[in-house]
Image (cartoon, rainbow, N blue to C red; front, side, top):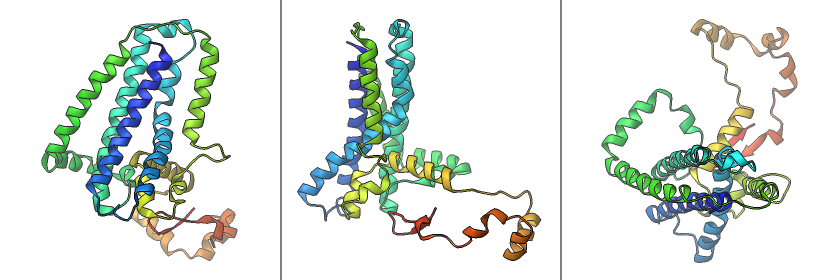
Amino acid sequence: MTRWLKSLLFTGVGLSVFSLARAALYLTYRDTFSTISGAELAFSIIDGIRFDLSILLTAFLVMLFFFNLPLRFANARIWQRIWGWGMYVILILLTLLLAGDVIYFGDVKRHMTSELLVIGNDAGFLFEMALGSYKAHLALFLLFAASLFLLWRFILERDLRESRLMPVKFLVFAGFMVLGIRGTFSDKPINIIDAFESGSTAQSNLVLNGAFTLYHHARAAKNTVNHHFYTSFEEAQRIAKTSLKEKVEGGRMKDEKSSLIPHPSSLIPHPSGITMLC
């Protein structure tokens, strides 16, 4: 079995995990998706693969690059195991994230976004909850992870067969990776808003997955949100009591004087219906 075939099988297994998560979401919350017709359901499943593949290849990017490096030493079994099992660990983490997203969806009727990034000291509480209320879910997850381990080992440990024209195939595979991550032939890669083109919130939520929404919300927050943490309560209180005029004249907001009133283009609709300020 060539490295290319193994890579495609790993990717296929990953997509199957995402499809199972989508099926679990649909079957668990049938009432939420009851307005979706049969044709819309089929479209959601097919279009969802585009979003699944985008985040899956983003997560696998480094591992797949080194796994398929077109150099002779990259055929060594130890090299293949390092990057192959690295992909397995990433997929298990994605599976855990998707499982949590299905449970989370029942409370808020949307996918997980930036909430996971601000868990902080609540990690212990979530761990206790997993061992309490969700013991059955945890056991099912561990069983699934063990089954996935056996399948992954079966694929990874197959005898490696040399592939001809390795550099050419590597370039083709790189092109597939870029296209898969971008999810489109247009000049802009797909984003959360692209899933809402249908105009149906239910259908859009079925197209999306929690890993994709979390990743893109995290990127947006990193690029647009500037959190300022003060060293003391007195400092925060002093700044809060300082008038806007004094701040501008003092140079604190000198460069932001023209942006005190947000431009309409900086307001973007959020899938939940809340307008966000970029």
